[in-house]
Amino acid sequence: MTHVLHVLPHPGGGGETYVDLLGGIAGYTHERAYLSGTRSPLLAGPGILAGLARAARTPADIVHGHGDVASVLGLAALAGRPLVISSHGLHMLRRVRPPVRGLFVAGLSRAIGRSTRTICESLAERDELAAVGPADRLVVIPNGIAPRRVGDRRLLRAELGIDDDVVLGVFVGQLESRKEPLLAIEAAERARAEGTPFVLAVAGDGPQSEEVRSHAGPAVRPLGFRTDLEDIFAAADIYVAPSRREGVSYALLEAMGSGLVPVVADGPGSPEVVGDAGIVVRAGDLAGFTLALRRLSGDAGLRGDLGRRAGRRVLDDYGLERFLRDTRAAYDEALRAPGRGAGGGPA
Image (cartoon, rainbow, N blue to C red):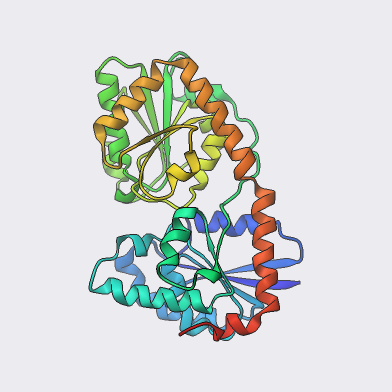
């Protein structure tokens, strides 16, 4: 068996789902190493050196770095073993500003150069990284999901007291400013105030949890952290994702795969996934999101058409089998070219 050490910035999030799915690759075993025990940048610092030391001591045939921060920070400690990187939304690269940006870009360029393959989740990520590091190391492998079981449409609606003729939207994700849950909430409240029979359920936790709960009312139903996504998606009609930047969101894929109509912001990531199977709104445009919710709530035929397109798009382009096959090819290449993974690329 070939052993892969996954270096993640912290527990939780899409990186965990990604590694879980890679367990479906025959002949490979997987282990996680975290650089920090928390998602909070303010609290992460003291533990990073210890996390790097643990990762450096852990035996592995391949090291797989997850995200731009973990890949840059872990580069020195993990040198000497074949390296694969997954970009996961390029959250630091997309937000860092001068003068720190120059240092970070240089570190990321070195990490890409030392990798055998840097896996980009989207064409947008590939184009951004092509301006940073060696383009011949970049490969596009979109995230993939297996078909979910069909949930029960009645369960969440009964729990929330929502009639079947009310259009239900859902937001699923970390309740933090980047994801813009408060914009989704305000759009729902405005749509409802303008006479639209629409309710938004908000599933997740995070720094904005208390503020989200303060909006509980006829238009907004906070759910907290939930694991019953099959039943949540089965109950809903629309998936609302105003996030300013994403990789290829698993929640978005699962919602589309369940036939929900996606309404997403035009920041990097989501529009590429949605294509013509939903509505794309300018990031931060409250009026645009409100209009999209009102339009979809008033047109069952449009919801049905876009929902069918969304399900077909996930089935055709974001399947689990393709994701596992292409990731295995990246691992196999790393094993055949250990010199490049050990630092044979440009410094």
